[in-house]
Image 1 (cartoon, rainbow, N blue to C red):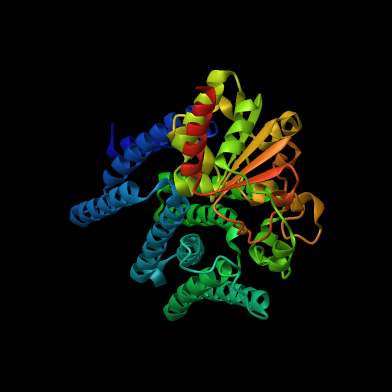
Image 2 (cartoon, rainbow, N blue to C red; image 1 turned 90 degrees about the horizontal axis):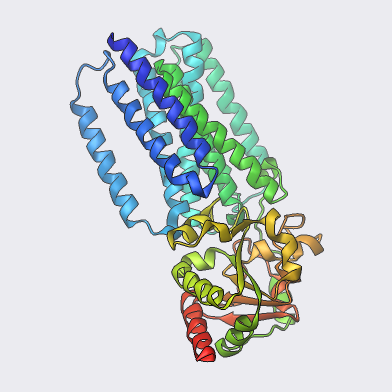
Length: 461
């Protein structure tokens, strides 16, 4: 078997493992297996690439591999589950940076000798890579609250962004026609970097999960373009899979929010309504003690738990599992309702609940469980805000109007575990908190659930 055949075979097997691994990620039951398949596929892809005859020295590859592995281990070990969206944004930034740097280095070495097709793919790679780097870093800063979560806008911003976009495209076309115009190539890189910043700054924090999925798609497209530029088949396949899956995920999430991607990118969604503070001050709500809440929950026969980012922040998932076991022991029907955009990224709640060892059979998507709220005795909402806000159904002036929500308001009793009455990620007030059948249980979610468990045990003793 020749070296070329061996490389082609490893790439072929890697591609199959990537595809089946991605397919397995569609279900919590097969997700772990899918991750292992993708990991094996990546090891094979790296091995095949290292066999390439174009590599004349392995010193810098080994140094880079060790440095990257060390950085990855540090990030993986020290990143809490609550910060997974930020870690994902950083991963996109690093991946896009690698693609952009490879493209810049390739142009630096071979710029004037490159064919038209090579220049097209190289421009594509560098443009998407550069804007993804800065766009992902801005998304990270917003999720980390280093930047305000509200849209940062100024007059004429969309027009300026459109002009900037077409300027970048114009320079890219000129560089393709005149490859010797290398200074313009680097100007294009700089403008694309600026465009990434200006693209994400006007987007509100509520839309950041969609933005991260879209940036994931951009990073994948940049990687695929790198594969074309370097004539590396596995990079083309992996980048195309990443780009397509990220784009499909963006579409799915936008539909879950009843919004178009165009609206996400240019709608400045998440800007607080002008009358939010007034409406909060004018309304009354009912708060209750842990004792009363425990009594109502223990008497319920059917309970639906709605997890949100507040559960992740307080790391309450393990306490939630103990509460579920306690209620189930008495015969209570306990299930979880998972909104498609609950938390800060798709599947965030599924991962947290799986980490606590909660049975997958208890987790239900919004479409599966929404009609059951009307037959539910108690809906326990743990740190979720916007995904249960009736304003999405009732208030045409609300920024989230039209967004599909969980029908928690239709349960007989609603327990909201929350630190305060402050608005959620979208920055808007929640009508649910002021309904007559809603009871606010203030405090850290983990401590509150532990207190409920203690109270329920005392009631049964």
